[in-house]
Picture 1 (cartoon, one colour):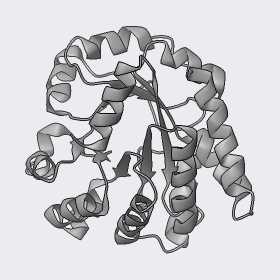
Picture 2 (tube, one colour):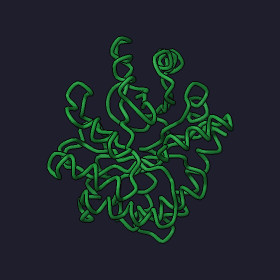
Picture 3 (cartoon, rainbow, N blue to C red):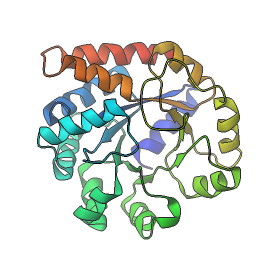
Picture 4 (tube, rainbow, N blue to C red):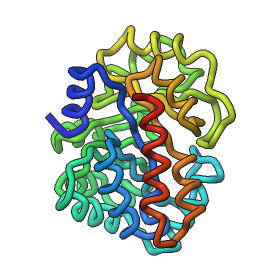
Length: 264
């Protein structure tokens, strides 16, 4: 059982909701990414999503686009991200998912990237622009490597397609609570309970809900109908705010702790 499955099994046993953090790898640099990962693990983050910087992040809003740009500017490459995961693994066992666009896997070499990711200590991939129907050999290679295949379900996904998607996923299902791209919002979507119930009707996998969650109160509301809450842009915004200051890790971690307190 990989770390993602283990963590969600522990959460279920303890009747607790999970907390998933997204940050852009290499923003502001890979050493900061390493330090943030270790700090997040210490305060109770359940899963860390690392965005692999890409020049055309079509699923991301401005905040995460700028994070990807900063990551590229700091010289972050896919191999550099994997090396950083290896360094994180020397200090902690936080479950790690790579949030990545398929072009990067194709360029690196799909089988090699999956193999190298598993060796570095990655636990799963969330490939933003890879529909299950077009995944080819991807799922088989991921299973062989012991990595979770995390798929997205959108508010507009018909129920018959939800059934097909979730049967091919492993680890957890990521429900996008809003149409459009990532970004902070002033309120949470009103139909989360209905949509998560439709997903749960077709799978026993945990459902993590993200996109637009920006503060502890929103996190608490979403957690009422989700197995885990995902926060990205609001945390990435804090990273941008504190840049390369010496207070980056404690300031961002304090904000993450406030979000965790919102769901627990």
